[in-house]
Length: 320
Image (cartoon, rainbow, N blue to C red; front, side):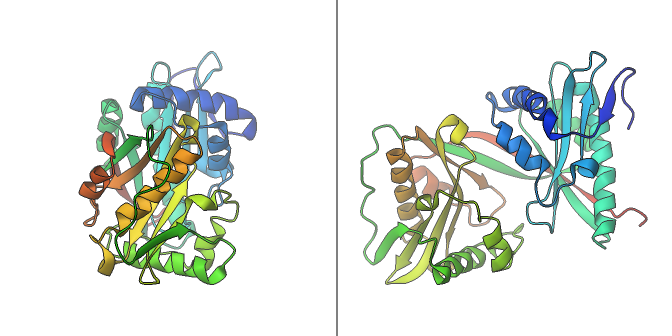
């Protein structure tokens, strides 16, 4: 890794979390206008099951010893694509973003070899203000892959109860202690997403293990049509720092789409968020998804607030 004179790279430890968070907040404020990370998010990234901070992450300090950059690899499922984030203080660390990217790409090559794969696809996000970062990715061989749209709506003045669903449709919270119900939830999610280009299936046991620490099960909903599961909604706490309820996944079985099931699930989620005092609700839309229902989201009051582009590179395994 080539760095400017006087700059130093090292592996992070959990003692670095406050300094890393300061860098991430500066990067987020430049990219999207507000901080979007918490100290817990940093710790989770450094202790994720498929991340070894002694091999998969770097921090960089400037000549004054100030931490100005952090790079980390993420792979939530342990299979399929790798995601690389390189956060820099935009005023002090921009010069080291490209060198850190190069180091992480080499590490992805090593991870591919360790998994016995001929190559791995790595992706990096780019927000509209990050024009320099987009150029550095292109210079490194990355290409534009897809765009995500972030949508949000205010929950002010929302009725205490959601509107009645269409005839034959019922919506209720998930029963987390009911194993058959959890398996039905996973089945609906799996079937609904199999027609999307980037879907990476997970067996039920691995899918379930990702949510062992989940506490807000009352924000997960199941929709039934004539008594049979037809759609599911999974919430996430990823936006609680700005008091926003977040829809992580909305899945409706193909045979029940465009029949009001998705709108009913969203309405119930919004009502639950409002009951908990959340100020807004949001979600992200993969615009490459052929089923991306922008008209549905707009019909329930969601509006586009920002976009993020994803760039990708196929990295041959080390030694290939």
